Length: 84
Image (cartoon, rainbow, N blue to C red; front, side):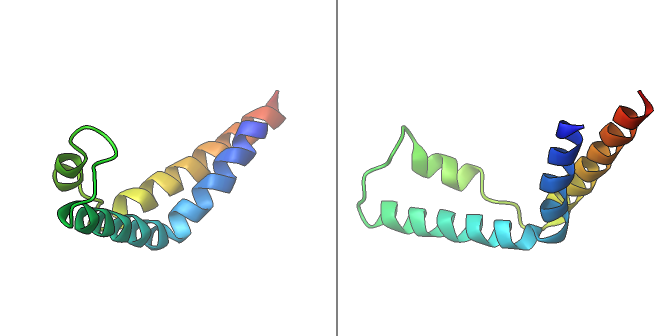
């Protein structure tokens, strides 16, 4: 039952406010690339290449779908806990 509550508690914000997380990740990646281009040292091996190769997602669709799925999974776990 605990894991069901955790699933619902984390899934609802993912489904309702995915734009907030995406915008934060986009700005962090852009800022970090600007710092590296200005001469800042990379924090780990090939950080710049990783930032360019794996940019944050352009849409909220995937995060929203994962949040809905996590919420439904959490609800299913709670229902199964009550059925036992």
